[in-house]
Length: 476
Ligand code: HEC
Ligand code: HEC
Ligand code: HEC
Ligand code: HEC
Image 1 (cartoon, protein in one colour):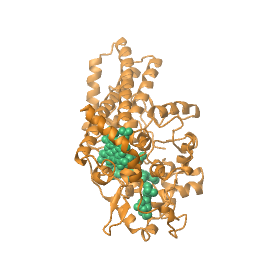
Image 2: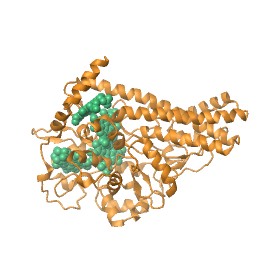
Image 3: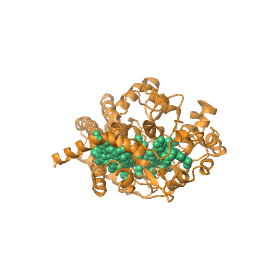
């Protein structure tokens, strides 16, 4: 069996250069196009007349269909088969009140205006990746954009511009349809990594356009500017170190956890970073190879699909082009297998991370020495970050199976260390660990059992585990 696998891998590797040539070939080179559109065009309707096939393909993003682990039906991440302990892990933060699975590009504006996470205090930063008008506003408003009020200032401004959810102008120069980067923080962050994106190859651009939005980010202290923490690298641990260093610049946390008081970092969809460290990116495969496969239209023309969805729905065209020696049903079973192993590890890490918050809550309420509390909190912060980096990533482990499993193992180790530190101190204080454990299970059951997703978080704390801070920190 092992040998069989090795032969296949060797076979694939020998064919890599072939794949890259075959898969990079394009029906239509955008370099020769002249659209007649103005360079500032941000409305999809204007592109519709010139590229009706692409526009029609784009509209398919409205379709909603789930796969075993992914997909696009509007669903709460708190669902039993998803991540039911999130209202505890994000307790004290707006993510504990409302957090849904992502869906198609055409829904981003609807979803951002509807989520309970957006409050009266939410700022312009949250609009950055949701509207085709954001790059224009960033230019017009300068650094005020990041701090401007989301509902009262930024939303009316983008609406007035006739914009769209993630649209043509986000990735294409309207004049000639060349791929382009429109989000300035991507350019800055890549420069910090020594990469000049103006010199990027077309193949790199086929991932970079996605890397503008499908990434980890934070709001810089004082300016509130959306920033990508990539200076040290794309791995979860590189970014953890970045955030440790960023404390000196005033960025301590995304929120303080209401059970353990830990300053927590919230991970944000690091699809690009996780992918870049995985086997496909290392072999020169781009996001668009799988997510923008060729579509054959009725008139026989081939276009790059603009329906960004699960490639598991289009295995023949998304994967079969390169893995032509494989049976597609077989390959799909392999993917689901990778995802299932990953999901089990994710659930385990999530569970232990949750327990750790309760143990540290008990340390605080029984008056354990604060240096011991801090050292347990440090392990919680690291453990939750490593877990969330995977949980917030959208491929259920596929983009980088090995890297994801490594993160989850390290996450589990760190959370277990927090529990170990707590247990030693709590035993000294005479706390009954069996009682503690059963109270933890009761609290978890109460959260999971509540049907109203927006109320689940209120059951995470109780008389036995009193909240350390009652307020919910809004998303800035
Ligand atoms: C080798 C093929 C491949 C490449 C390249 C690839 N992906 Fe994926 N992607 C997948 C698969 C497979 C899934 C899992 C889909 C599922 O579970 O239904 C996925 C899932 C996703 C999802 C979630 C989709 C859903 O239905 O929930 C997003 C978002 C995503 N990828 C973005 C990206 C981005 C951004 C890049 C480049 C940085 C990228 N992908 C590169 C194969 C790929
Ligand atoms: C999220 C990024 C993104 C958005 C949004 C987007 N495109 Fe594309 N588009 C791409 C990529 C990537 C390619 C492949 C380019 C290549 O291989 O050189 C592409 C290719 C094209 C091409 C070249 C022909 C082809 O099929 O490969 C046309 C024309 C095009 N897009 C039109 C549109 C139109 C019209 C819209 C809006 C309705 C749009 N695109 C929205 C990323 C995007
Ligand atoms: C301007 C920002 C932006 C860019 C550029 C962008 N995306 Fe997205 N993408 C989003 C947002 C926001 C969502 C979630 C929308 C929602 O849930 O309402 C999303 C969702 C998705 C999904 C999930 C669809 C589903 O059915 O669950 C996939 C897959 C995806 N993007 C792939 C890509 C790929 C591949 C590229 C590059 C070719 C890309 N995106 C470029 C912002 C962007
Ligand atoms: C552009 C070419 C290309 C496309 C498209 C592509 N692959 Fe791959 N794939 C490769 C190459 C090359 C490797 C070998 C990478 C290595 O082993 O270093 C690979 C390796 C793999 C592996 C083994 C490595 C791992 O992650 O365990 C799996 C599984 C896989 N691909 C699944 C898929 C699926 C599923 C799709 C479609 C969603 C897909 N591939 C699309 C080129 C591609």
